[in-house]
Length: 289
Image 1 (cartoon, rainbow, N blue to C red):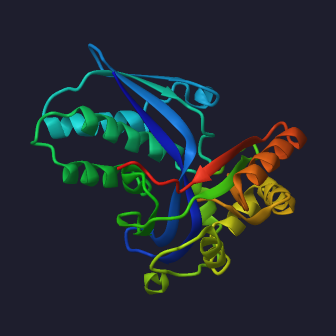
Image 2 (tube, helix red, strand yellow):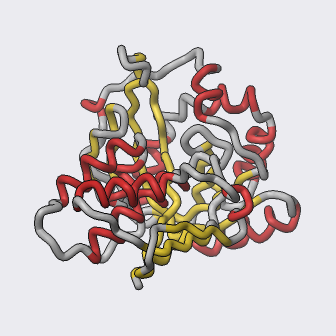
């Protein structure tokens, strides 16, 4: 049995560039990972299957094309034979919420097979190439470390971030990425030459983030005005230093001065807005590798 964790992916900023000939936009983002996420268990079985439970499991009920299965079939194709597993996903993250839930799950599936794989014919590079075919966020989630991300998600430069204390909030809704892009009217463009070489403290991260933004926030707000209420609540919370939407929404994050402030804010927001999903989180906590 193999257990893997699929952490929430947070776009600390997200700029959109020109639309390419293939219909995708060039992007640039600083990505961090949270200590909250989905859990997956892989067990030997007679056939490949996926069972979903957890707080948001019902939202995926009956979904036959889950990215987890796509990832598993992709690894089997690389191996040249079936890899029958009983996969159980405990879905703790809201679905279609801008924090990479499906991509993180697919990436965790690739990591699970990589952990248990014993034949050298499948190289790490093969897994990376497979990740690129599964979605723009899957490669960065596969590596699972804070990184500068650019291109259409295929450009990844690992970077270290100091520990950031955050509160994640979703107003109980999802927004489709395609719909958000259809409402996009203003873009910051991409210019990786101006990325900082590194950050010595949380203060430096926040100072940088105040010079950038999320280009998808305005179009997402036009589709889901509740995002604006979430952002206001986060910005008004004691100890808040910055609040922003992640990805294409609707989940937003607030950065706080310390863990105690983040925990207190999360407790208060959850009390005042019982219908919202609210989680205190640590972002960019150093991995053990």
